[in-house]
Length: 334
Image (cartoon, rainbow, N blue to C red; front, side, top):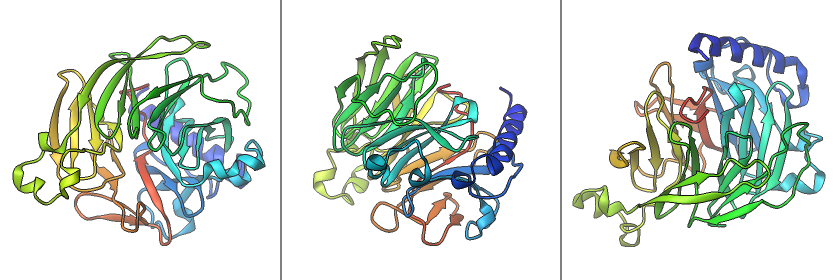
């Protein structure tokens, strides 16, 4: 899809959302270019929100779309707590869907125009990210659970409320991120101590992953001695990989850690130091403008800001943002 076509797509989606599901589509009908919206996990109210990048985020009209699990009849009452502290929001299905996780245990696929959940399941403890595979199956990454979980997703007639166990589990210590590489047909996954690549068998009903590559993550490999001295000694040997996300227009992945941000070239399989900023929970680059946004915690693991390296901030007073990503198509993966 062309960039111009993508702009039209989001305009249509948001105009539809403004009237299709008032409970889960907060904000007026709006026409907005694709590269001028930001999707966020908002932990103060457990919402997934799409915000207008160029509006004042303290105003109601800046919220273009919102999904609240408590207001979605597709989420069973006894499962609402699974959606506590949303931790991931990825634009999928050509811009019509959102793949999300929550630290309470949920991994879910949302439909933006309908403002409802299409599929959800319970992940191992504390999921931080998920990925949509080419056949529609889903894989999640759980930090406390130290595992990737693979789910069979129905091909047709997705039924909200599915909560069966994962089809398969794969150990990955302190797993935090996963990204599909459509060119190389690999799933890249980031843990605390390694970046791994998995092959997928493309079996819709009997899916399986197999680890193909593994690269050690260690701050001593990326930071100079003077920078290492600023880090508590116990962390010098442990990268603590967090957000894993593609750099648009390249075959690179960004990888954030507790004390550094890396780029990983998926072709040459080489790492490079992007910067030595601490603790970014998310990173995203606008494919049209090149603007980089990130979330760096101000209070514990959250912030009411989505920030840029030049010091600019988009602020929603009282918000607890965990991740913020440009609402844009991810051509690296889909």
